[in-house]
Length: 412
Image 1 (cartoon, helix red, strand yellow):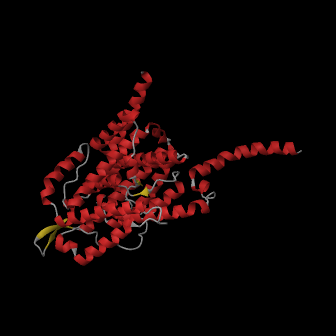
Image 2 (image 1 turned 30 degrees about the horizontal axis):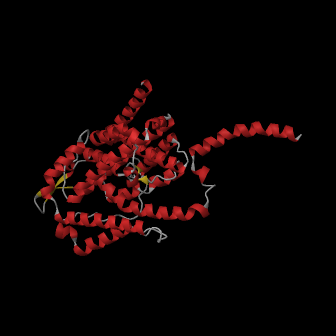
């Protein structure tokens, strides 16, 4: 009787498994959260979460400037998408939120559809025209939310049609070259803030070269006050990071350098009055609280559909690349299609809360890590493609080149 009962139970359990597996695949948090070990992981996760959260505050505001939207939008984009990814994501290590390359791409869209020239008004006090900042920022927020929502829909659709197979061609050298090239774009995008100059925003292939050339022409117009503040901030952050590394074994929690830098810089700016005396641009007033959800402006979809698709692919490429590297290092797997859906939900839901497109932030350690001697063909090509063609076209060209190398090696 026991044997018969066992035989009757086995088929039932066998047919129930796919349903449970489908639920766990769709909501990965249900898989790992019940097995979470508080004793082993809580302290490390708490320290890491506080450190990353502190870093997100200044980064979110800074990347919002790259996206040409008010700084508070960067804080929204550092909050809502993270909650969604927590539920649907499969990577244990990537930090989802604002990312410089994505912000630059969003900024290109907002500047194109809501340029300053569309919001010029007459100022009776100065008898000259000026930009209506309030109206301009409202329109740019609508554009950023629309392109973010649409990019999220693209990512969800790509995940549902199993587009994750493309990660097969994201080899380690391709990832290293792509992240290095993207890092160069980030550096160049920050130079105008470092020198206090205002070059035109270029887009398309070779835009990086055009930007660097224009920056060289504008260097004589450098705001000395802004340059001094930038140098002090950079040197201070580097020294503080080295101090953190030196004291890492003695301190239970790393020194919150980024948060201290924001507090100190704010106090200095307020006391010295950097904006009026030296012309140093400041963030300004940041509104408190959270705004209710707003349906994205569907009338803008037709104008941003191409940009949205590029954001969807680039954001996914960065996230899955770094996710795979960490997964390989720590011995677990990331679901490439589920990652698409997780990022898509983060962006599409974030679009209702006036967020701009997010991905995951890159580690400088990952960028500097060696790629290996036998695959420098691919690394160099990816780096050059990303540098010259920009992150969107660069990623497509790099994957195509990687596929060609596989084909040629197979034929030979």
